[in-house]
Length: 153
Image 1 (cartoon, one colour):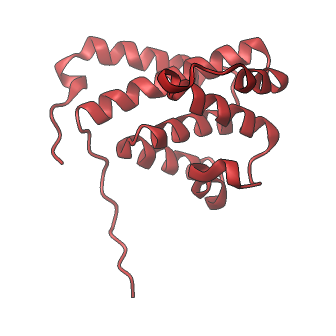
Image 2 (cartoon, one colour; image 1 turned 180 degrees about the vertical axis):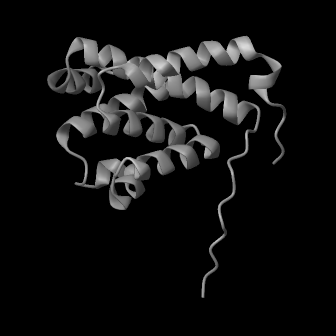
């Protein structure tokens, strides 16, 4: 796969606008673990290798466990996530796949039991922001950096 072009260089104003949305998310009152869940889960759903690579590394850097990171792709089957994280993940899945899900009431109501309306707004903005980044990275074939390749013994 080859990068199509560097969207940040081609349109600095567009990049600046998306970066401003990202800055809002980073400065919101959302817990860091929730921001990591949102970014990593949406990136998994969208098949964005660039963002999955970045957000796994950021999650590790912020002290989240390997198990917590590794089982995210199968979160429904793992007890490692608490009730708030599970409610949030259901909303991430629903909003990221909104054309298929329509953001169902049961998923929203579960979220509303665990978060305030202000938090739900920030969560949904964060979901929208990572979905924009994913569409840019996947659409323009942004390549993640390659770490040292591990070889099986």
